Structures are given as C-alpha cells and as structure tokens.
Amino acid sequence: MQPGCVEVGTLLDREADIRGGRPKIAGTGITVSRVVSLYRAGLSPEEIAMEYEHLSLAQIHAALAYFHANAAEITGDLAADEASAERWERESRLAPGA
Image (cartoon, rainbow, N blue to C red; front, side):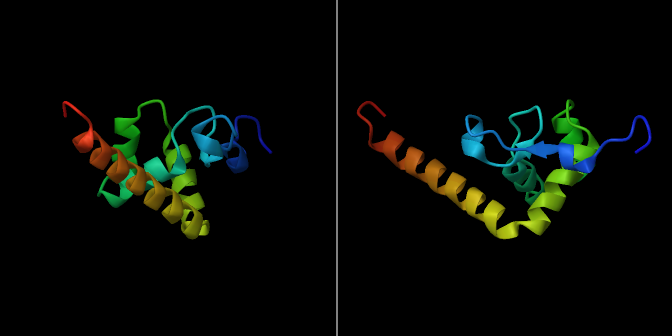
C-alpha cells in the first residue's frame, strides 16, 4: 500500500460499549444506521458530510457500502430505533404532568 492510502476496512468499527456494539464510523459515535437514515431522508453523501463536518466522504460511502452489503442488519437497527422512539413518545404522553 502506498503512503497516505487509507485501508477501507479501517473506516468502520464496532465497540461493545458504544452504541450497543452497532457498526459505526471508526473513532466516532456516528452509526451506519444514522448515515443510512439521513441518506434515505434524501440527503446526498456530500450533504451528510456538510451536516457532520468531521466525517469524510470516504467514511460516509463506507457506511453506505456496509448497509448495501448488510441491509438486513441495518434495516433491523433502524426498525429498533423507530420502535424505541415511538415507545418513548407514548410513555412521555402518559407521564404525569405531560
């Protein structure tokens, strides 16, 4: 490998104590599912990079590539996130003083 080249496999990682061990952009707390949700909402990779200025286009494309290679896993993560948000919303409406 030439000097200055990035090994693509180093762009993503998992850490059991960060985001429940979900795949994320290495060195950050930004999950692959977060990148995918923005992409599905209509943002281009370039727009996602503007939203998260500390991420490179390579990192964003790596997250999207991971999603395309592991769609069932990431779709499951997105569904779990949506269910948690709905549950939280329901519970907050039922809480005293809400």
